[in-house]
Length: 608
Image (cartoon, rainbow, N blue to C red; front, side, top):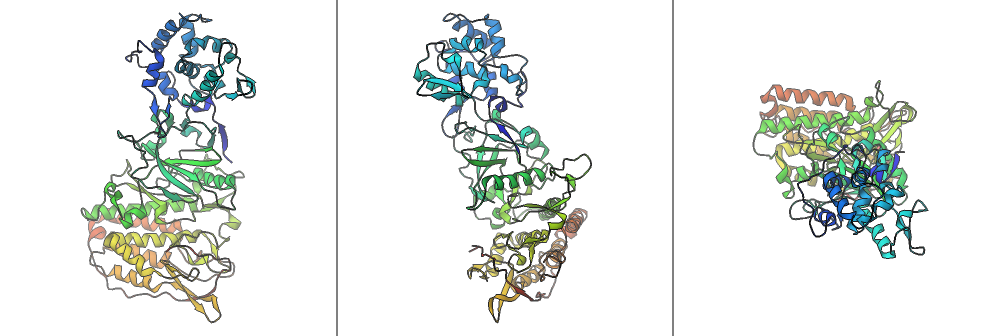
């Protein structure tokens, strides 16, 4: 389980550089003093609430401006120290904002007092050593006192504070203590109070919510939406640069939706562990978790935002593809080389999950409690779980595998014997999910990839129209739901009804392979990819004693990676191999039927 970070003030500021400079070119207004300047420079959140991150406070309340304000306030009330000494106490020069040293800062408290028109009270806080660490405080309406961890905050009761002033202090404190996200804490989970202000800000000059114009989408067990995080409230630049996403300003916020019978902690813990084991730092085609937090009884993940999914690209259904730099027209060689690179990359990402050598190499962090060798499985591969990012490392962008919420991580003795009722990917469901005594294995991921790759080659040769036609061709009555479904395999009932019968790859799928081979624009590269998919990935075979279904028949991700890597290299060596159309008159290879018994617990997918 990830270590929790209770989001107190020391945690908000962790990771900020020491001695963040102020800006003394900004003049304090003559009428309202520093309070007016703070209000003028406040950041407006998406919800309309203004806030001040610590870095912004240090920028506004520079050393010179702080002394200027203290000199003005000293006329109203005597301080326990000189102005220069008070300035050094409130805004220490050497503070590094670590959890220990930030206990000695009064910058947030002072800003809060100034905003409430009580800046002259800062001396009481200094005398009582009521630093920024007292925030947030609670207000007891009956006693009309403010408390921190059950102890009365004396600095607020020695003066002539009225109840409404204490309420203002309690309410305004959230504006100077917004959440702060630091990638150095990615192995921890922030625990935010219910009222902790999340630093989501509007995107663009029109003040719009960043999610406007970008669709929300479901991901695994959650809803994903776009957010823009105030740059002063995050420290992601280093990791974003390392995964080729420098300059990323939009982020994906995934809020976990817990299944009816699920445990919030268990669902979160599983996805969190997989996201830390497998990420963009380990492989460039796996999504990178930036932060996680818990607030209002819900768990949340933060990732870089991808405006497109592979499903968007294949369907080309709306204006979102204006951002995609790889139209079907244009440089054919570049387009096919990009496709070859992505097939290698995605296969490499799945190989990384299936064979996680990086967790066991000398000097590596195994991220498993006992260090025993384990193997992984994604279990939820489909086009909308493959994201397109506008990468710094490739002008055409990168496809990245996401949604590890259903991923599993198993020991040697159990890596392949997971019940077939798992891994139900709508439309891309593998046959073993429905077969009695069959199992969902790493081979199940290979079936899913085969379905996806066949659609990608269809897009490459015939665009989104051919993809849509292929989907319509596959639609037939699902043996479970009895609704029309675009599965890649079919089931024929036996003489005793739906529980027994025959199963195989759909004839329309076998016919589609031959059709693609016969297209005039099909180059050698595409022919080779189609052969790999048909011969080594979309394979149905019945369960055998001691051999999990699909495990022995489908080629492993490790071997597939080497094959796709070789095809990618050949595309760069020879333009003729990559792009010259060479139609081949291939015969339809109908796959054999296999006698099976349906899993009594099999459930239908609502694929439409």
